[in-house]
Amino acid sequence: MQWDWGAVADFMPHFWDGLLVTLQALALGSVISFVLGLVWALLMRTPSPFVRWPVGAVTEFIRNTPLLVQLFFLFYVLPEWNITFSALTTGVVAIGLHYSTYTMQVYRAGIDAVPVGQWEAATALNLPLRRTWTAVILPQAVRRVVPALGNYVIAMLKDTPLLMAITVLDMLGEARLFSQQNFQFTEPLTVIGVAFILISYLASVLLRGLERRLVR
Image (tube, rainbow, N blue to C red; front, side):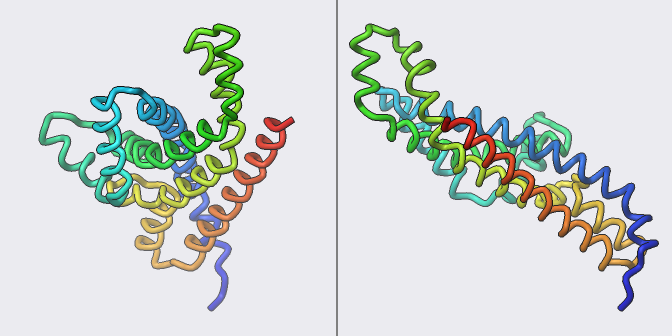
């Protein structure tokens, strides 16, 4: 077997298109998962069981069903209820929603790790509850959970190829289409594998830098 650099050159325009889609899905899915995960975590701390129980049931259901099933449901079932999104939007929502149930647990652990003395100090200073959360509790909690959140970013990156199942041409989708059309599989799939490794490594480096910056 010989390496065909011509095939690599022919594939590269498709690769850049797929890379852009992959990074869009990763970035937007991460934002949704981080924000929604924090919302879930805060709702789970409310004293009302009428809030906690439904939130707990929904997040458990999402966390314990496969992401691929959720993708198919959002893409094929929702249109029957006249709720239609583009394939990429559906994929972004599915990834963000799925991983928000994991980041919720990360936030809960970070909040629980804040020393009780911090709550007591905020109470002694007569800080409003909103101020207590935004100025005292959440900044400390988020700093503690950055490494765990970073792990889920990399996990989301590795799950983006699932979007190919709902016609989204991410990096792997572009490689698969190119390979089928040109009967050349080694070069495009190797390029994709190297790209995933490089993106994962770059993400881990950036997250370690952010972690060091936050713990100063």
